[in-house]
Image (cartoon, rainbow, N blue to C red; front, side, top):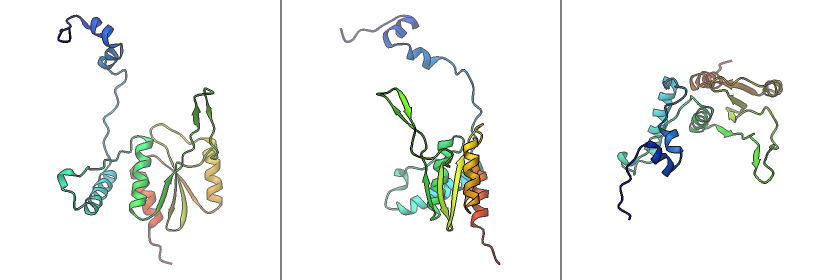
Length: 180
């Protein structure tokens, strides 16, 4: 009984294993453009992995896992920026302002964090820096614009970042040596 071969058409297989097999075989509804990693991110990724290899020099090179960064999603860009800031000795932390889904009640509970806070809170050379990640077609909301104005009025920096190249340009401006 355990060695039987099931022969039949696709509908038999779908009936045996569920409709998820049919969904997995169907072509994508929309085709995404191929991702091309920017040179700034490639350079950072190489530097990050070289420093990581130096720290883990006792592990054979063929056993090390290479860290890969992307900037085509908000999560990927946030992860790359935080890693870059921490690697260069700055404080950086992700700020979670997403609510929590309460299954018992069947609704989202809001967080205690203020609406409009940036995705990344950092301190670069003694200055408070807030970075709001805007990937793809994401646009700033009015509450984010309000917080930006308040942070800047208090002497801090609040910027919208769309990709890693834009972030590197901002970082270079913030860390440039100024001779008075």
